[in-house]
Amino acid sequence: WPGPDQVVDANFSPPARTLAPLATLEGRNVSAWFGDRQVLDRVNLTMPAGIITALIGPSGCGKSTFLRILNRMHELVPSASLAGEVLLDGEDIYDPERKLVDARKHIGMVFQKPNPFPAMSIYDNVVAGLTLTGRRASNDEKDLLVESCLTKAGLWKEVQDRLRAPGGGLSGGQQQRLCIARSLAVTPRILLMDEPCSALDPTSTRVIEETMLELAHEVTIVIVTHNMQQAQRVSQNCAFFLAAQGTPGGIVEHGPTDAMFGNPIDSRTADYVNGRF
Ligand code: ADP
Ligand code: MG
Image (cartoon, rainbow, N blue to C red; front, side, top):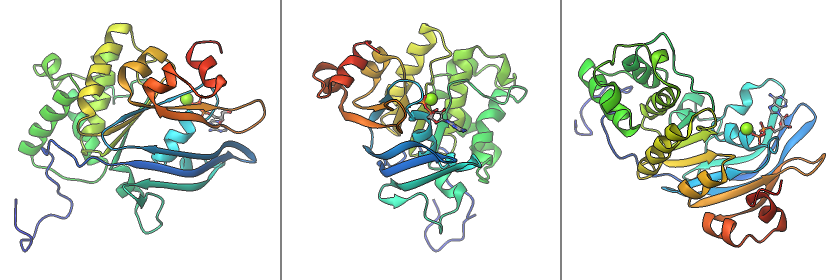
């Protein structure tokens, strides 16, 4: 790469880099509201570098809201407000000095329903992940990027012969892996996944889980899941969210997944992980 005294395109960063520096994400006293209604109350959670953290808990307790706050998506809802801090390696992603796109390009997001651009080619779907953040790349760099992201997402072998076919023509599980590849195009440091397998069959689910375990070597992953077996298969740390009747959601208990499932401290955690509510 050019030395520090050489002029480089400020928008360019090497897309074929295989290892992003691992980052820690930390929510501090995160509270959230929709209008007057508080839905999260002072959530504190450190999501350590290189670890898969699972967020579990019943529907409506604020897991998705917390995840969207980690990616600055919560603020897109007009009635939404929040308090607290989100630190990416100690730096506040809500720092007013920091552009939104700058915060977002470090943090990828994958949703429950696979949402590739259906008419766009598989190739262009991956590249779109890069261009949405305003970065530019040559055709050779794009080729490398597409191969590397699809490989990391566990999809390359299945699609390398039809990169120009539309993303919408893939199976559900393949579409979800395409979305993962797209989110990897900016070499994110954090990957947030909101129930990424809920819409998929068991076979596709296992393929995505294997992909996640591989990816965890280079990106810090936070996954929301309702599948307790999945939480145990993929995560090292776990946080149990709960919203008692009429109160905002919060974390009841968090810690190593083995301990949460094997020896929970709080009886509500024990009930939940054992399927009693
Ligand atoms: P979970 O992901 O744990 O199921 P959510 O974060 O989706 O929970 O929701 C938490 C609470 O916030 C719920 O009571 C839900 O109804 C409410 N909520 C979520 N999104 C919105 C929104 N856009 N406007 C108003 N209320 C919302
Ligand atoms: Mg949710």
